[in-house]
Structures are given as structure tokens and as C-alpha cells.
Length: 147
Image (cartoon, rainbow, N blue to C red; front, side):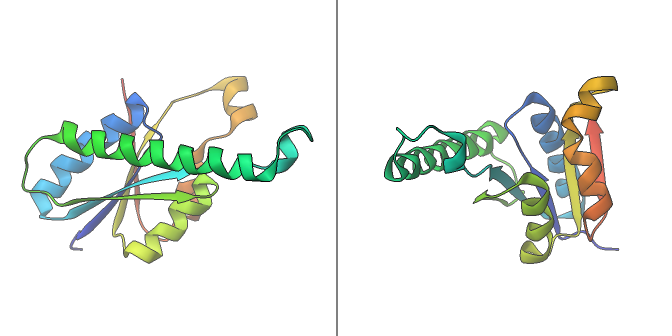
């Protein structure tokens, strides 16, 4: 199987950065491009008191997206000059859904993502985005743990 497009979801954590390092090496070896994806969780108006107006929430969401775009550019800049094409995408949506939808949209052959490695109660309460992506994605998923 030829790998042409590697999807790398990021939450800007050190775990996601570690996965991006792996993806960069794999993309270099296979001459693939990387699509770096950040899914910004939508702001629900129901989570705020009545004193917060919808236009203000929209401004907050727009600022959140602008900040994410800026952080994506910083991620790409940190990679330095290399021969790998890195494209960035910022979308609004639940992370698992956004990642799985991006697989089809970007025609990704592989997802490489980090894992926080939570165990016990934290895993039960918070769940694992990586685990859910492994179960739902329509392409192979490589989960990279930082040890």
C-alpha cells in the first residue's frame, strides 16, 4: 500500500508534537504529504449564563479559530525546512467526528496521532479520543505514545 497522505490530528500538546515528528519521518520515507488537523470544539450557548450574548460567543469562537490557525503556523514553522508538504486545517467540531470526516475529505491513507496514555479513572471519565478514532476511522491509525 502506498502512503500518499498522512493525517495528523493535533491538540497542540507535547503528545501531538511527538506524533507529528513520527509522521514527518514516515512522510519523508514514503514521499507523502502531511495534513495537520486541529478540531476546535464548538462553543455551546447553553454552557453560558443568559448574560452572555450570542454575538459575543461568535466573536469568542472566531478568536479561538484565529488562535488555532496561528498555532498551526507555529507548528509548521518548528518543523523547519524539509521536503515534506505540510498542509493545515482548522475545523469546528467534536474531535473524533472531525478526524474521521477529514479522512474522507483529505483522502488520507494513514492517521498518526498521539495519546496521552491516561489509565484508570481518568481514562474511564475522559475516554480516549485515540481509541475512538481507531474504532471509527476508515483507514489505518498509528497511535504514538511519548515515553
